[in-house]
Image (cartoon, rainbow, N blue to C red; front, side, top):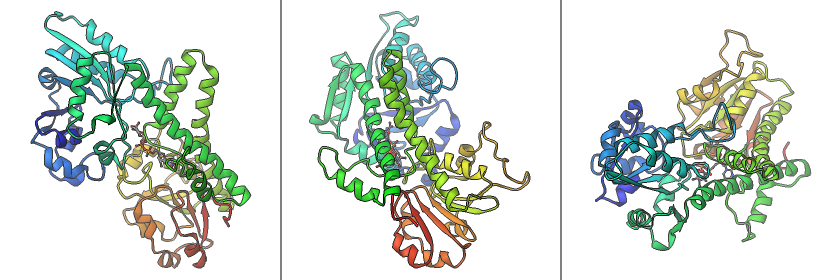
Length: 451
Ligand code: UGA
């Protein structure tokens, strides 16, 4: 919405949320403290906040005066009941639809922005059209307008998208939304589809991207045992135009709030229609992802003589990828939990993730941290200083490709660590030769020439 506000100064945009803390965060005068870190975002907020972008908790009043309402709530995987572990929890979408139905006035275009299983627009429609209002007083059109931005590059993705999908069955409403996008996006990038094609295209795009990562990650394991190098393999196959170079970097597994959830939604959809082979096929993409995370952890334990008890290990990076403070589904969570479970003491550093966010991700009632640990001893610490995190450790595990980690002074690091000392580079961003020359052991994911 910040990018909308910047490009459409004549449109007044209210971002409303029922959570006052969140809204307070977005209204913070200190722009370095906005709830979401995204390169370039704070500059835009500075320009548009208070001009034509307002953050508030006045849900009812905003809906009342709106011509168009975007539903942008989270849709996590359902934890209980039918479809638990696979389909999305639609409680927030449903409550939004109910509120819109109650408070809207005149004609309102409702745009589904959250990523949702196919046919959710129908649920929204059913709720909107079923409420107890006089048909003459209000009317609704429902559109699907999925978001293709990726975290870390969100502003650029929104300013110059490859395409914008507008799904619907009301031509006039579709034109109205198109009209807004035309403020900064060329017409050939605006695609009209029916509602279900638009919803399904979003899930499919994420499933295809995730599938490529799981494919290359499966190859990374073959590289390690055969002496091939996964960076060379992905470069070579990425040069084939039909395959292309994007999303072929192997790593500790994909994370983020989207890929796993959206593939699981596809799996659920396939099963619902009795397409069990299709469901199994896509579930495997998620399974390879969990396997890759487990593989990284097992490699670390093996290299450290099968024993992590009382060893200090530095974790570099906790966000699911660089340039974001998001930790949802980050591979770091599973890897760190397993290391703690082995008795290791972790010193965790990240460029943007806060101590509270790490605490929230790591602590889980289903996970017994005390296993293998002295009851009163801490099992992890948060380190703002990268070098303090590494000093006196037995190993460093690089999990997120932050730029800061590319320029670590390994010469000075090597003076103050345990021996033998291991560096596990799961993102293949370090210069292995430099480390080896200093006498440090390095393991790089997907590299067959590991020590
Ligand atoms: C993803 C899609 O890329 C967006 O198009 C989509 O709009 C978004 O989900 C969404 O559904 O909202 P995002 O999850 O922000 O975006 O991040 P990605 O850049 O796709 O990265 C996802 C994960 O894949 C990260 O953990 C990343 O490290 C990993 N990855 C990505 C690789 O391991 N290798 C690659 O080559 C690329």
